[in-house]
Structures are given as structure tokens and as C-alpha cells.
Image (cartoon, rainbow, N blue to C red):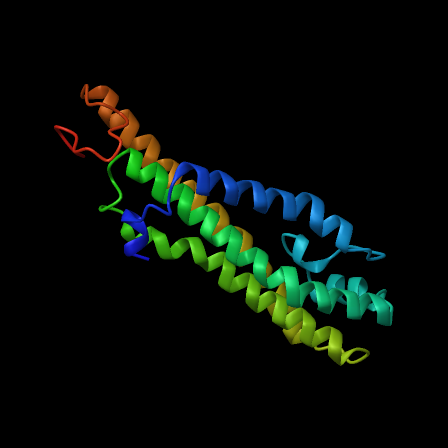
Length: 189
């Protein structure tokens, strides 16, 4: 992670490419691949065990197989892509503001949603394989994990925006160049 901060791989073209790929997969590929009769659990912000049971009990055997195949493919690639997208946007923005060294701890936060997404996908696939048996406790935990996935995404984006906004505001108030392009500013926060 630390070597990525100075890597030439973290560039505007690479970051734009990651954003485009994530948007295309999320809003084009997933809807085309998923032909489920009902909602897909991991697209919901939260669900109770009753809601999860209602959703997956309406899946046919072919829907279950399709869900598992989609999960094994795109549902494990996609989280890694959006994790790197979040990280690259943060690294590029902080590099432009010349504050990347001060906030290294945030880098790992880009991958917390990925961890929760993987956990959620594995749990849902397990539950689908066990149908018609339904584990209420696991379903409740999965609903909470889904909420944590979206919550950690939100916290990461919010934290990056707050730090960038504070840095820009501070530099405006103190007549320091806002974007230093990796050059040392005369006065740092």
C-alpha cells in the first residue's frame, strides 16, 4: 500500500479508467447478468432475516446457480476494483494536495467495504446452497454485514472529502497554493 502512494500507476488516466470500469460493471453488466425474479440481497442497504428469506425463497434452482456463478465471477472481482478505485482517487487527490504522507492510515479503509462485501457474498452463497434450510442467525448477521459494507464506503468517502475540504480551506485562508502537484507547499497544515 505504501509503495502505491508514489507509484506512477496512480495517475489520472488509471483512476479515470477504474471509475469507468466500476460504473459500467455496476450499472450495465450487473443488471444484464442478473435476471432474478426479485431483489438481490447485496444491493440492499440492510435486510432482516425475514426479508432475506423472502428474497431467496423465491429463487428457482436456475436462479440460485446463476447467482452463485455471478458471485464467483463478478462479485469477487468487482469489490477489488471498487476498493482500488477508492484508494486511487484518495491517493491522487491527496498527492495533488501534497498531504499523502499525513493520512496513510486511511488507505486501508478503502478495502474495509471489500472485506465486508466478500464476507456477505460467501454468506449468501452458503445460505443458497443450504436451501430449503434457512439459518436465521446467519441471515441477521449478513444483514448487518451488508450495512457495514455501505457504512464503511460512506465513512471513507466522507473522511476523504472532509480532509480535502479542510486542507483547501486552510490553504485559501493562508494564501497557500491549493494544488501543489506533489511539490512542497511553503506552509503545510
